[in-house]
Length: 145
Ligand code: CA2
Image (cartoon, rainbow, N blue to C red; front, side, top):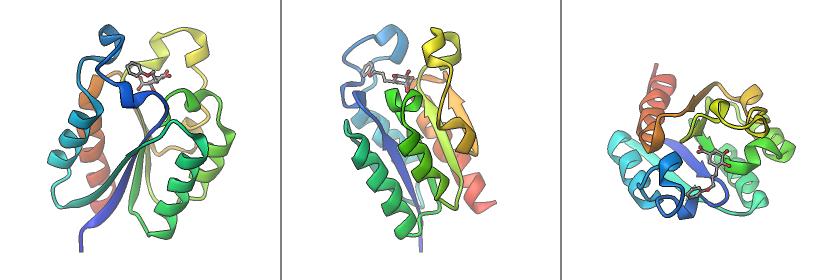
């Protein structure tokens, strides 16, 4: 059976490709999903986006209950605010990749302190939308050895 991974996206990322293209590029989230599915052939991918913190938390719980092999998460602004997402991720037994389209460390100091990084297996930031398929390939290595 195909291994299951979750790719979770936080607030405002449904608008990807529509604003600040100099930072985030012109690729839409639907295109990002296609890139993930291409890179993840042979994996089952649950690709989700929400503007609601509780929904992201519920999806982490769902990933645990479904026995998912890994989680890739771009928590967007919740990266810098959400102890609740951090606590949910702490309960996940498999690898977690925190992903950011932009290099958050090159930006203003408010973007430097992530609540997610301390519970992540790896962090990818600054590769643009192509960071997503890279994360899927990296996740495949992590879960398939
Ligand atoms: O670089 C990333 O992927 C971010 O996680 C994106 C977040 C931002 O708060 C993080 O600092 C870095 C969300 C950006 C706002 O959403 C946008 C949606 C569409 C186009 C541009 C921005």
